[in-house]
Each structure stands twice: as structure tokens, then as C-alpha cells.
Length: 249
Ligand code: NAD
Image (cartoon, rainbow, N blue to C red; front, side, top):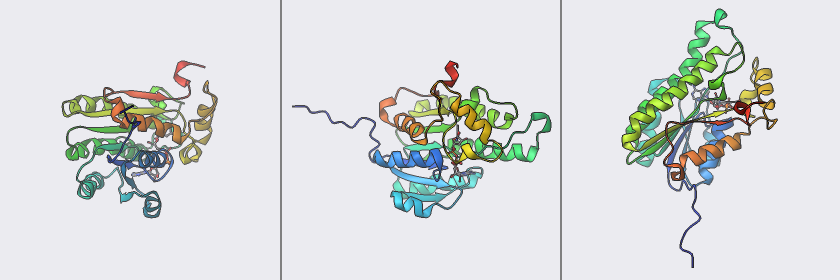
């Protein structure tokens, strides 16, 4: 008889934190991780207590742009479960078109405070509660490889996420903590309908060889793979999930 078990990509009993877990890609990732057997903390700036309860996970309020909130998120997760295995630094925002020559520094700083410093905060506090390895995943964007005029703040914030991913991967490799990021093309989430960016986002989404936007579940499936032990030799990568956009028309 066979003695192997079909537990490929299992996240059984892993403790996972997902920021921006209340909507879009974060929510799809929370659901996927729960299905794969993980104990999941859904972290979000907006109150998702009810949603978390329905999904069988724990809600912790955290604005990732605030260092204290992220420190508290990791501390509370650790106190609840005794360990952290997986952290997905996913919360992010976009803003309407603004040429660099017209840059409003308040808008720019707000975007960086979430998209860049939110990830820095996660990279600072997650490893403190990891033992014998761990996985950190960051949501970058295909924008890290270029985007429309007027998206300098968003593009550069996602380039920073790629850079932080590589830097952290090197620093944390001796502790067997793997750090990767994903670069999705437009995902069919509320962000793809954000006022002032919806045209660009959706056009970019459908002008791919595959001819459609990415589904949140499809990007969450990639996160599932990257979070699992089955990909334990992959670290420091920026992985594109873009319907062929980067390959060409
Ligand atoms: P979304 O707007 O549907 O969800 C974002 C979630 O993050 C919301 O629940 C929101 O409340 C939360 N959030 C916002 N600011 C926060 C903060 N400061 N602290 C904690 N939570 C916060 O968007 P989404 O499309 O699911 O985006 C998730 C990530 O994917 C973002 O980093 C985004 O930049 C990235 N991304 C999105 C697309 C896309 O087209 N939708 C493409 C590539 C990358």
C-alpha cells in the first residue's frame, strides 16, 4: 500500500497574519489559508470583527502605517497562538493620477506610509515572533516594472516593496525565514474600481495576452504556494502574476 499523504501545500496549524485582510486580495488569501488549515489573523484598518468570526479567524485592528499598531498586531498574535509562521504584508492603497511635477507631498507621504512603511513595519516586527523559520510575503505590483504616466508614487512604492523583499530575504535567510513578493497585474477587487484610477487599472488588466484582470483567488493561490513548505527553496523573489503582460503583447 501507499504510505504517502496528499498533504501538498498544507498549511495545517500554521499561524498566519494577513494585513489588509478585510477586502480583495487580502480577504481571498485569508479564506485560502483557512481552507489550507492555517490559524489566521485577519488584520485591517477597518472593523472586520463579524467577517473574521464568520471565517473562523481572529480580527485584530491595525493601521499598518503606524509602527505601534504593527508591533501590537504581532505581539497579540504571538500571545494568542504562541508563534507566528506566516505574515502577509498586503495592505496597500493607490491614488489618482498625479504627475511628479504636480506632486502633492501630503498625498505622496500618505501613500508611502502605507505601501512602503507598512511593509517595513511588518519586516521589523514579524521575525521577532518566528522560531525555526517562517515565511513573509509582500504584495508589490506589476507596476514595479512600469505603469502609466501619473502613477509615480504608486510605481515607486511598489519598487520599494521589491527592494525591501530582497533586503529582508538576505538578512533573514540565516534564520530560515523566506521573504518573497508577488507582482500582480490589475486584480478584480474594489481597488480596480477606485475613483480616478479605474480606467487605467482596468485597461491594464484587459490588455494582457490572457485578456482579463487577475482574480483575487488566483493571486491568493500563488500566496498559498509561496506560504507552503513545498516552496522552501524560493526566497528573495518578485513573482509576476500578470496574465502575460510582462512577456509582451
Ligand atoms: P482593496 O482596497 O480591495 O483592499 C485593501 C484592504 O486594505 C482593505 O480592506 C483596506 O481596509 C485595507 N487597508 C487600507 N489601508 C490600510 C492600512 N493603513 N492598514 C491596514 N489595512 C489597510 O485592495 P486590493 O486590491 O485587495 O489590494 C491589496 C494589495 O494588492 C495592495 O497592496 C495593492 O496595492 C495590491 N495590488 C492591487 C492590485 C489591484 O489591481 N487591485 C494590483 C496589484 C497589486
